[in-house]
Image (tube, rainbow, N blue to C red; front, side, top):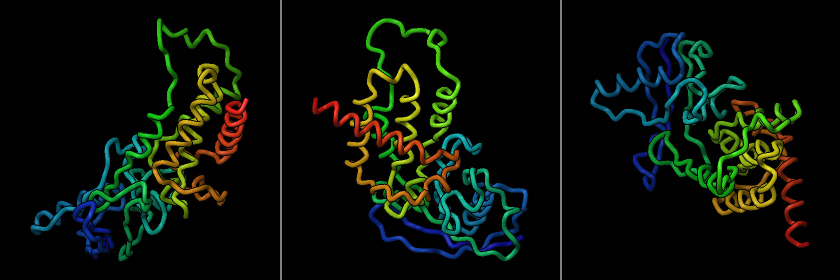
Length: 249
């Protein structure tokens, strides 16, 4: 099948961007979406044109780097998948596909479909870890953890930090990402000593990066390829309020 791609092209961070229409060569319906872009890039290079810049790494739905808005939806039309897991059988011959980068002030476009998601890394650096300051850590198997708490922690830890929640939110809020990274420790005994300091520091880092506020419309949950639930936001908000009260005491 052949398709028409309407792709965001932007030469550099400060350059003015535009939508460019590109006709694809013959595309196999068994290709993944990123494989289709590879074929299109090979065709562009043979014609002496600039290839489309886009991010990818694992191409297995693990790394979260394939940050594309496809026909207005983060990671495309399939729920619970990343762009690299989307296959061309979702589309029909002659379809027009609009491909854009994440849109958020905190995610500046570097080139074409590549954005700088370093803001998420800086939020993690602010407190998304457990400190072990001296000696050997206690054996994790020696710490009893109830099954519901262990499963909830693992569900939150499934977040791959792709930024789809930010791209899908009208306010470009990072609350779902942040709450997942806070919750994965809040459910575990290893995360308790730094629990209040962690949420304070990470919320402050999120605000400093220029992300918007949450308005509880749940677009983030709908777009999340790992299907992180908005209940993690409620847990984080409770911890944040408790941290404020603890600071006042």
